[in-house]
Amino acid sequence: MEDPLKDEAEEAVIREELKASEEAVLFMASVEPAELQRCVFADSLVTVSEGGRALGNFTVTVEFARKDQQPCMLLHAQSQGTIDHCPCGTTVTAYLTTDLEVLEEHYHEYVKLKDNSVEKKWHMVQRGDQLLINKVTTVGEDLKTERVSYPLSALRGLVTEGSSLLLLRLIALRKSAPRQMTFLSLDQELRLVHSTVHVLGLKQLDVCGDRVEVFGVERTVETADSPTKWKSYFLADGHLAGRGQVGSPVIMRLSHLPLQWEKGLQKNHLCMRDMLLCSHSLTWTEMTQHSPDPNQDAALPALRSLPNFPGWEEDMQFSSNFLDRKEELKADHTSYLRQHPEIRALISDFLQFLLLRKPDDVFQFAREYFLVFASDDSPA
Image 1 (cartoon, rainbow, N blue to C red):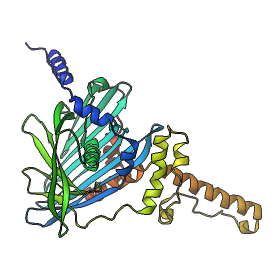
Image 2: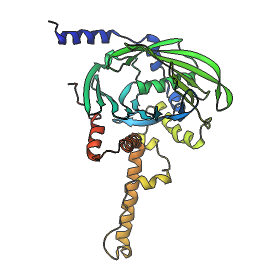
Image 3: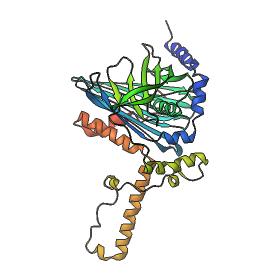
Image 4: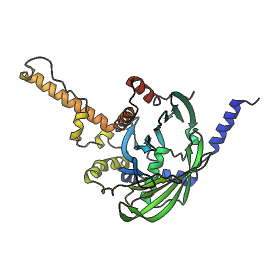
């Protein structure tokens, strides 16, 4: 009789033997702070069918953030739409180091069928010298949980769903890279596999009615069944012009040409580049100070209610203390949200899925939705 534990151990050894190419590892290590600064912008595309019918949208944002007091990059990507009358979507939120190492990543994919729904949630996070991965798959009422861990030493050159989007943006901005690089990736069974990035070079492409020059990059993930290929095309400034999976009738493309860097956005993030270049001479909060958006006031949980006793407005000292405290809380909340931009992305994703499912028991739904974020320190 075969020993299943022995088989799992042998399979784990095989996985760890997979390695990224030196070209891939060196490319990730060569990323400069100034390059990351140029990557801080948003992409917005529409998803269309082969016949040109709009099916949904695809967005990618990259910004500076903090993770456990460590400066990092925050990438948030979201795809949502309707295919064959079935709502579907994918959301990725990733915290990445400056050399594209994954500190933490959340992945959520769903398809709402007529009689059933399918959800896949991944959560990977670094714990000590390990990368812990927790996957929850829900098909109708059936729930399956999988957990696995890998030593970080075996993951040099790992590229995930989140980090791959930033990697491709960096390659497009450089407009040059080794002809082909081999990275590590994870398949749907949480196994290590190879993925390759191949530079397609320059070509002419119709974008929003204009013939423009774009830079193409192809990414292939070598899964057990068959390779999955994605082709992406970028404008000269790094904005994504088009994206599609080879063999799929669905593509993503720009609905309008993006504006150039806005002066306000450039000014807001110049200090972040300086922080990376100057070895963190100031605190992250000091470096990210900017005027709060006046439209955000309605979303801030500041002191909205007034003191509940008559004549308080005539008490100058009390009134002054109350208003000072109110402004102090508003500033504190604004600062916290600025330091944790993932909050808005997380709440937005949750509300979107809540409205899609419309559950009777909202509390139970919230518990199940956020359960995947509570990873244990070690896999089961």
